[in-house]
Image 1 (cartoon, rainbow, N blue to C red):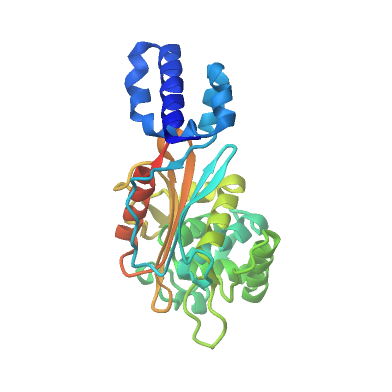
Image 2 (cartoon, rainbow, N blue to C red):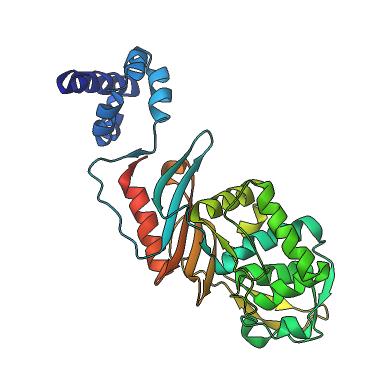
Length: 323
């Protein structure tokens, strides 16, 4: 289709839609005029233009649509990925080394959480072992050997404050080796080939074992599965803080969420942080897509400033696509 014919078609469908919707909505269509120009280049949609409802349904299926005038995005992170998930459509909106397998630190705990939900009762009791109590990232050292908690409370601590002592104590119920086997079996069942685990915490291994790793794209697949099958995980990850009590009712400590974007970024559905010397700063964040079209899974791996780069990624996606 020539540029002149394309412009003519765009004007035709613009007027058709504007008149059909009522003159008070013309301004809304005007905002999307250049989008309709792109739509007009699709013969199937132009033919459907005589039927306004059919046209809208077909045209809407093209969104989100990348704006030609959008600027490129530069991130310092080693890898990044943004995936749009709608009711009938998925689309990768940004990728940088998104297929590269990299250390993922405490993003590991999303899969640990899946294993826990599948295998434990939340009212089950578990005592903190000396090994678990000695883990770095132990809620400021407040989980002491012999302290007993319900699984559900340690589960929240593991997710909200990324507590490694809680993660190991929960894994030890099954036995750490069996627990890690179940983690790997879970991701293998999802068809993920670049994801593997050697521990339930995400800490850098000291014994030479393989580090927990995945790709930004496969982490997005894990997040999609969690969102669909176990959304309560992300509900917990929205908690900014909570008081952790042992089974005797004594306060262990106040657990504070490690995600600095909670309360700062609008429309957050949930997220998980991670950071170790070998993995760098990692962050997975789910946010609602513009115009309630679905949600966005955003992943940052090995970033020197994971929170600001995540804000940059989400802002770029929202403004670089026509929604």
